[in-house]
Length: 263
Image (cartoon, rainbow, N blue to C red; front, top):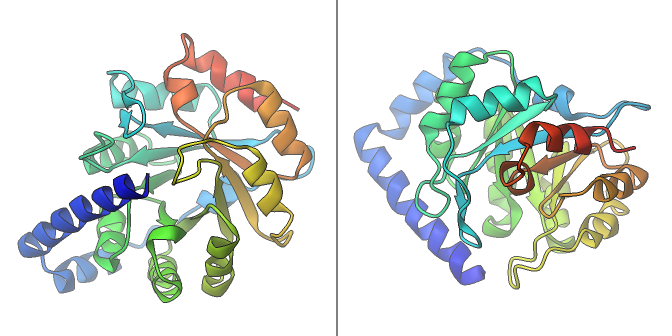
């Protein structure tokens, strides 16, 4: 998987360098700073006592593991997510391996400006954060394992300066150290081992114990059954990020309700 991860990042670097030729960083930075929207993503996914778990439903066309999942209309799927009770939407915008598009995110925000939308991509350059603001994202994903400690802190601060939230994704204790160093307030625990592709919900249970109570914790990957959510709720998780099991379900609306109502 690390080879695949490196390939994804390399492909993204090429795309970012092309974008910089079209619109230099000084220009996009200036434009992004004129957009005065303030993210409500943190509030949307913070679970209050006695509330059901918060659900971030993902727009995902494909993955390096499973290939193409399903062809579907992005706006219709977003509509289904919202009407079924999703608390926020994650949109994968990575083009080469996940068949995503930045356009998906912008279209959803234009149709549903009140809905909180996360841009899920492989972000390593502040240019991509200014781009995310221009795309109307409320929050961005930062993946600890592809960034140095200092990059984590710098990119986090750039996003916050633009009034955007950050879902900071970790996989192990080393990544968690980066989260503490950067001072993040939302920590996503990815249950997928990036070296073996194995998914272990125990990753969330193990790392959650090491995270201070004042952080919002999101569990990601491998969540497909009511029993998974019940265990996560017991362990104090605020939110779940679910894509594949909803998209591949014969009834995505029912799947969302099943996961949301697990107590």
